Length: 151
Image 1 (cartoon, rainbow, N blue to C red):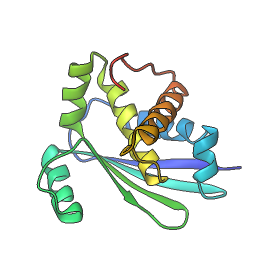
Image 2 (image 1 turned 60 degrees about the vertical axis):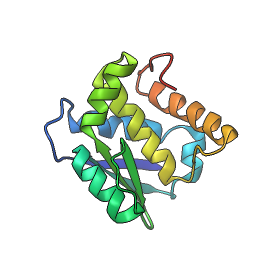
Image 3 (image 1 turned 180 degrees about the vertical axis):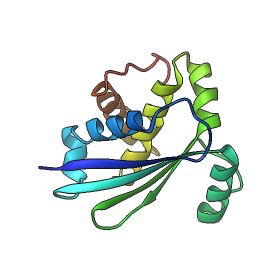
Image 4 (image 1 turned 90 degrees about the vertical axis):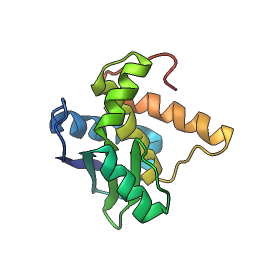
């Protein structure tokens, strides 16, 4: 049996409990296509909810790009799938922009980061459609419905 667990660090004040993120990750880890790409047995992912400034610094340091983003993923090794950094400011801004709550946006970005860690991307149209389908399937496992125009 495959089990995916998350360690969650809140580096900024964020209106969400770490247990919420752990549940989203665990339930996303039950989507068949995601299970197929996870290591056998127990695996982990680390999620850091942080500032836009830290995301910008991470982007500059590891991608050579001097701008902020909403989520970044860093591949891990072995049973550690990797690390996900999420900008809380982007969560708040995008939740308001798309008309859903902050937990919904955080769930979407968490799953988005996880999918990147497992090898999915969204550069080509076909890839984007598959990533969108998997994101929706994963967040629905947590009883979350995205705003219609979000993806």
